[in-house]
Length: 311
Image (cartoon, rainbow, N blue to C red; front, top):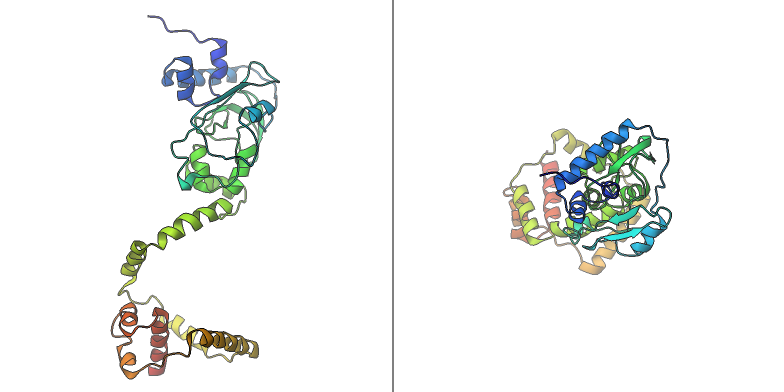
């Protein structure tokens, strides 16, 4: 049984989309497509090529086929979009869309959509980290992206650079097929702040909401219950000296206004009884606060004052 030969039109499709999608389109196995992609890269390396630079932006045909516009949704539909480019009739713009985890809040975009640049194997792009690099094909990811020749690293340009500055680490990691450590490394090398808009959205809508559930609060309380204070004697004495410093007139005025607003809303402070003072320090602060119906911060403050007076 002879193997079916690869045609020039099939070779042009290799590396332009996911290997599994190209295999289904050509009626071949995924391993055959991966092997053919490696062979084409080795053959291209042996040929001398002129430094032809590619456009880091998608061509007009790709934007029209995908319904381009930054205001549209950036989530991917389960279909593929194929359309011939007007400038190159033999080039096909294929953008696979993967809906498997796109509905997860961790992987949603706050900006977009993001399109891969139009380039070809053997051409050149300007990477923000490595300068002028040679393109070795597209990555096998939900958003296929140009890879550096003979390396698995992506070319940092175009919409990927915009996504690194805007989206969270989880979103970039999933849609571009990168590990979270690599995404963090890219952002660190590009001097991108650790907390960008996507990270703030992820922290505000997922992390904080999950930490406010009754189960999470009970778990945090159980972890802190009964543990001794980590404050050293030196730090405690330093805090007492700071509190005993004479206060300025502006500080006294601000504190007076704050207490006046507090008294107007909640009334005067409830005085401590001898029975309550005797309970402070005998049990964990949280348990004492529940028994005497006071806040945890007030119990801790009173214990701090009692320790200072005893010395």
